[in-house]
Image (cartoon, rainbow, N blue to C red; front, side, top):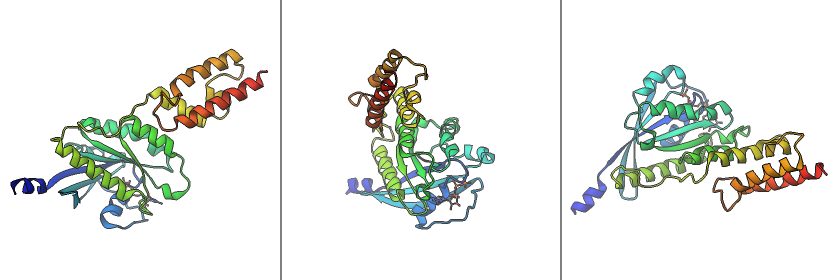
Length: 264
Ligand SMILES: Nc1nc2c(ncn2[C@@H]2O[C@H](COP(=O)(O)OP(=O)(O)OP(=O)(O)O)[C@@H](O)[C@H]2O)c(=O)[nH]1
């Protein structure tokens, strides 16, 4: 009996939202808590606060959500709220590269008030319904998983990914509470290096085969083979766990073949 009441004890958690202004933080939270979407942009002034209760398995969670304004003007207000956060929704707009490139700055801002390692971070690539995205899934995954964060594609407009991201987040918080708040559970193990990430992105985004391999237009057959071997070592599917490695390896092989053919 005593055991049962202990298990049912309410767990209080604090979640914050971070990300550039207008990337959709408030809409994601509204979509989850109120099941609705607001298309008009109403900038958050400082902080919006809300409470909701959820059940995960036999645990009841009292969830305190602090939706932080993304505008730089409010950074002093935000600084008050990072402390003691257990989870963060780190949001960017998949149709706005600047909001993606700002993710590191958001981590830096949080890091001044709170140990980033103590926070379960969920990255949301939002507005995926818009059909004009400029940051694709692979880039988002590589950035997020490289840091050990979970990655989700979301749309506050259609609801895509919203329940899933919150469900996963709550489950991770419950697991964490079962380990006395110590992060003994791995969230996502990166298992790949910056060199691998850079190589995958270059092979994907390079404008031509020279750029993909990272060699000059005047490169000799020898230079091409050297560059190929260097990349093949870090990208070989047996070695690299990074998302996109297999495709990158295929692109690498094709690029080398095409370049060597040109040099015959
Ligand atoms: N199409 C589409 N529009 C979205 C989505 N999410 C948010 N929006 C729109 O983007 C604009 C900004 O959304 P907000 O949720 O207010 O953005 P925010 O990140 O909270 O902005 P700040 O409060 O200024 O930090 C609004 O016009 C929303 O309707 C989405 O998933 N799809």
